[in-house]
Length: 427
Image (cartoon, rainbow, N blue to C red):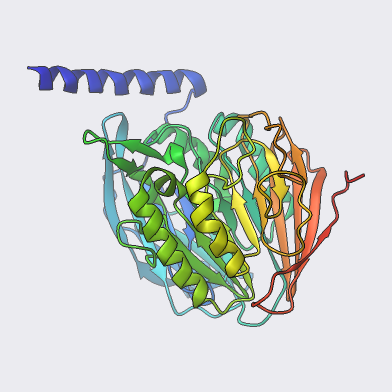
């Protein structure tokens, strides 16, 4: 009897959550026969492959992609090569079930612009474009976004769209966790995909999970939102049990690594597992630049927060292997600094730690200022430019105004980069 009452309580709790969400935004983001939530990731080599994932309703059991090199001709269907994908159903107590389709396209030409669409043979998406990575040392840029989390459709969408307007040829977008506010909330995921719109279908996403992508099951175990592995197609090169949340991708002269900091700060076994995995990945890394993204800052900017165990285990690895950038979220401020526990950084060399927020939820900054520059109550996006041995970092307000900037110069992989501050607000 108690079990039945608990099930009824869970059902009505989900119903109340669904109704409150609908009342708040007026959209239910239900699936249809046409592809939606289209997103690019990489599960393989960005030079020769592309992963595409999308959603339909459960009446569509076939997923395929048509891909052709872009030559500006409208005869796309005639020239396109067809790739078959896989389909899996995602169900939930508080949202309508949907089928998620994924296709991995291999054998592509490096540095080449492609046009594609996805569907089932009858119901198609629009034609979109992506470009493979170059094997040559060409300049490129990417975007980094902190927490979206709240009021995603209403207030976050303008930030990612301004980022796209600022750098529409960005090669990928790093999302540093808390993409949504409540784990397994399909409407919030609908808002996130709505906010990014066609951007997700043209610029690959490199996401890392935050605490708000997690919940605890009936056994009090930490569980990652099932949407994560259904809607993203990411590398499977992480530790067992942490696939697609802990992984790395190599893009031209850079290695980008995702750590699952929610599991690090709440699970000592996962902390040790990820530390061993990370050291191996850094040890065998041959790329000039190394960027790591995770959610919880090892030096917090918000009052009353400290991730001491995370910092004590991982910071020595960041320094030993000359990691260049640590891109973080969680604290809903902007902060940037280098290698000091407290006080304004004076250290020469070593990683640059950045915390940023792209959504509207804001915190106050702690009086213990480890950072060199900071901002409160400000939504931002970041653009990072790579040109051989030179890296330039730019942080922009949602208005498009440049707020912070610095550069790194690196002659080889086995030494820290030389840092130069270009902050336009620096006195």
